[in-house]
Amino acid sequence: MAPQKNAASKEASSPSSAVAPGGGPPQGNVINLMALAPQQLAQLKQQVEQELNFYQDAIIQLKEVQMKMQESNNCLKSLDPEKKEMLVPVTGSMFVKGELEEADKVWIDVGTGYYVEKTIEEAQDYFKRKVEFLTGQIEKVQSVGREKSTVRQAITEVLETKMVQMQMAHAQQQRKTTKT
Amino acid sequence: MAAKSEEFQKKFQTEAEKYAGLNKKLNKLVTQSQTLETQLNENQMVKDELDITRDDARVFKLVGPVMVPQTVDDAKTNVNRRIDFIKAELKRNSDVVESVTKDVTAQRDILSALEMQARQMAGPGVGPS
Image 1 (tube, rainbow over the protein chains, first blue to last red):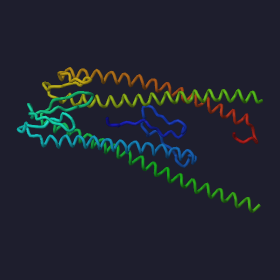
Image 2: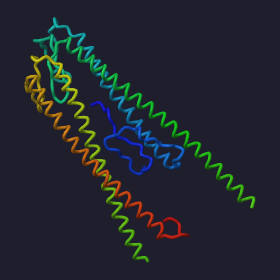
Image 3: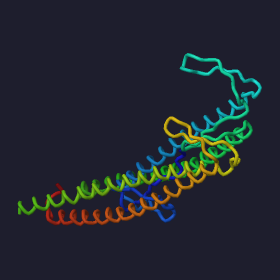
Image 4: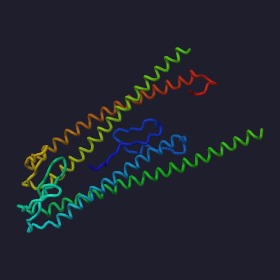
């Protein structure tokens, strides 16, 4: 469920179609921002922004899952093996009284339709591991996101410099034409 | 002259359409790869979990609306088989992606060559249409 890889490229030579299959390592992809035309820069900026959005969404999703795991873990803490009575929801607003047969074991959905029986301690361990794993993933995505936002910053700055340069060149041109 | 340019226009159009089609194909393939990648990840996580599960633990697999009991061993082999299958599929997919990427690049070259030609045909003094 966790989106860990994404295949987005920043090919400067072909801004019309930027689909990189596989998502190769970005080291070989050094772009001299100053060498790009303003239009290309704008395109690149847009692309980087899209990627940034993607990472931000990913973080939100990861945090949601993390919260669910944490919630399950908290529920385990309040599950007392001695207290077997409970109300079983039949519909959202109707319950029947029930009694737990095995209150010291739970079933956990581990993904792709598999359910594994675990003792409460094992289950707590499971959720703890999941939360830790997700924390790691969130940190990873955050660091990539920070990198991206630095790149965006750089692009914005270069773009602004270019704009100023263009305006100055334009003004000079006009002065020349008015002189002659 | 008019007939010639009309013919050229037509050619340009078909090539551009081809290019768009290839791009669409490529996009679809990339999305497919991503889906497979997600599935692989999920299966890998299940495998990791099953690997540290006690051998005598009870495991159920949800098939449609029913829970089917399985031994841990069976579940492991099933998940492993699934992982192998997805890996094979990913490999196949990435091969196709590679070849389609080549096609896209080739088609882009054709298009830009045509664009150049068009500019030359328009000649000097005539603005870009």
